Image (tube, rainbow, N blue to C red; front, side, top):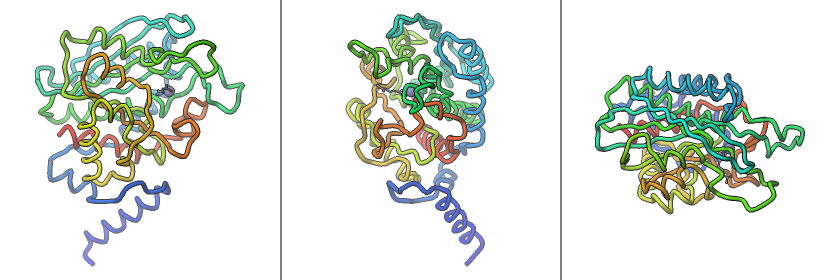
Length: 329
Ligand code: AHN
Ligand code: ZN
């Protein structure tokens, strides 16, 4: 056996040993090989992870708190440092309980003149409640949001860093959206409204960062950092943007990521992409970790005090980031 083959075998065994999650799809070509052929930049999972950790260090990024302002400034600087043209949108919205929320949407554009554009989104705010925590004394504590929020932003900041280092042909708009997660808790009395979620995205849909903004398609990332994540075909994504879902799950399979991107119908989630589809007509999908073995659809620490940095797995960040770079390049 030559050295190269034994190295590949060892690498394969290591990666197999590290993930004990049930296999949802089959393995194919190793990611690194297909990347080299097509000159796709390598996604650096350590860098993405440090972007997640940095956000968590600000404390919960809840609208109206000092952590929100501080983190917004940092996100804006980070996108600018990587060469993006940055737009900051300040808005205000009223939450389900009457609270006035200051909204800070941050958009970083690469190749602002290109006609062919992709819109990449993640929410950067944190839920103000741990309303899913089994410990009821935690109910009013905001979440750290390591996975629910920071993971998607961490992946997109690393994509931004790679875009700044290389020369993407496409226009790329990285939209870090605020106040996604301020929806009413289950025990809120009265009629629940879908429009209580994704407040920042709704403000942007009404008034995009540039007049007449269009993109060929959009991809939202939500909860893309947990160990054993499973990305099923989210219901509304298939409903509004089936071609994009087919393409994304097809690329995932081709580059050996079928273990994460399971080509089967999944749950529907009221998330930012629903409003982008309804309000702008830009076909937009949601890459979101949903679980078929869970009561609440999501990963076990969702909306609990346990959504902390130690739950973040570089392998999952790498899978999602590698997929995005393969789509864009
Ligand atoms: C609902 O539970 C209706 N939507 C969840 C969207 C969400 C919350 N994504 C992250 N946190
Ligand atoms: Zn949430």
